Image 1 (cartoon, one colour):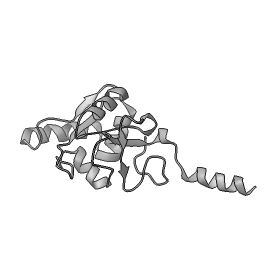
Image 2: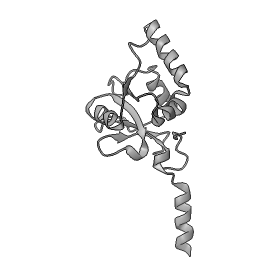
Image 3: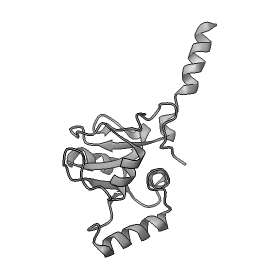
Image 4: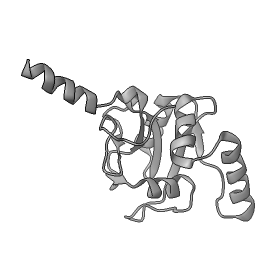
Length: 152
C-alpha cells in the first residue's frame, strides 16, 4: 500500500512531456539553462550572443504547427500577427537583419540545431532525442513539476 501512495505522489508531480515545449541547442553548446527572461531576449533578438560569445541563430517551426503556437504564447507572449509585426518593425529599423529561420518539420529543426553552432530552437519535449541538448528553463526540465513552457 505504501508503494502505491509513493508512486501516486511521484506521478502527480511529473508532467507528460508531450504536453510541454523543450528549448533545444546543439550538444556542444555552452548553454545548459536559461531564465524565462533570457529566453525571451534571445528569441526576440534583443540579445544576439550566448554568454560564451557565440552568435545566436533562432530556429522556429513553420506557421500552423502546434509547437510554434506554444512558443509564440510561452516565449514571445505574442500572437502570430504580433510576431510578424514585431519582426517587420525590427527589420525595418535595422535592429535585426531578418526574422528567425523557419523549418517545416521537427526533423529539420533538430538537424539544423544539431549541426549549427549558436542555433537555439524548440520542439515538443517528447520529440527531443540525443541529437540535441534540452535546456533547463528557470532551473526546470520538461517533465518537472512547475515547468513553465506548455503546449496549449
